[in-house]
Image (cartoon, rainbow, N blue to C red):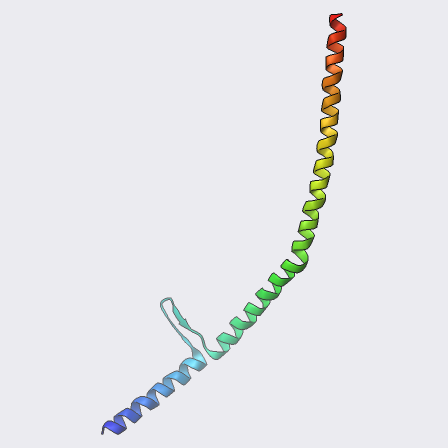
Length: 101
């Protein structure tokens, strides 16, 4: 009797394992994926990794180059502005000293 009961339990556990492998199940926050579900998640993960690699290799480098170019432009514009401001301040000082004389 014990052997037959143990055999029935083993058969039921094997059947349950096969069912879970084929269909999967979810209880609350716990989700056990089926074989197909694991393959789909694997493909999604591969796509995400490829996108991240593309961003790291190409887009990130392009953005760094753009930032460096914009920094150089900003520095040049700042120098031009400072030169213009200095001329304006110097010109104002000259005209004020001339008007006092």
